[in-house]
Length: 361
Image (cartoon, rainbow, N blue to C red; front, side, top):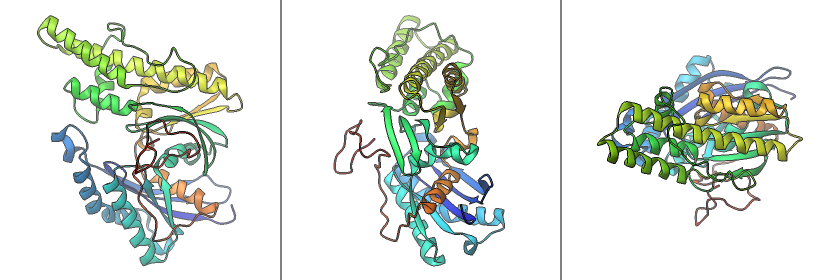
């Protein structure tokens, strides 16, 4: 890299409004100069999940505040930036539009290059931000809306090796939490409850382990939990705290086992990939991390997981991805479009179907 790059990043694809400033300097590790994430948990708490309209309005209200916060924290101003990077999809379209429009305004007002970033690429490139991972590597992207194995060859080259054919694990965790009366977001709530539970009490299925390849399915597992919960309640007249803990532990163990086995297969099928990295909100689950670490060790592969704060949606990953794309010559303009769907690997068949909005994944 010939010159230092300082990039402002914006993220608003779901229910976290975020801004960050990342600097890439020659012969130095990437630096996160400042970052802020403003969550919306309380805004959606009464609805059992994210309400897109509420999320979009909150993003529109908070994005400029987040930008001001990171500029103030870093001691920089817009004139010190080399570019503005923004999540241009995929995600809840109202939130993505809010971010793209804010970025366009900053770009036009400050005369800065604009770079539209695929949110999934932000997650997939996080190991390069945190650990300077060398290409190529295997990425398990596992979050509330996505689950796929990716071969990462560059900031513009991703090959999908497998993925979920229905629900993503994070979605299944959220629905499990709702079924058991736990708060949202469901992933952390289920994990906490599972620590006190017996993962062997209930025999939950491990979907698609009887089939070759790296594709996954979590919808049936969620249904199995519902039926098991109903059976326990019918027999005992209710659900005790111990019952709930055992259900959470059994569910989490099933997800863990599926992800671990599919990761083992992905590494075995791609022996040139000596690094497995994991990113996305579900990557914060310690039981899943530990299982993946064991798989990597057994395959003599390196394992990388970002700090917990960079597992969930954040703008530092968008700023970093934008910096890599900037180095590769990408420049967008004010015609940049917000996209609700945007597969990283556009050459592989859609796993979750498509329509007027394009392939889901």
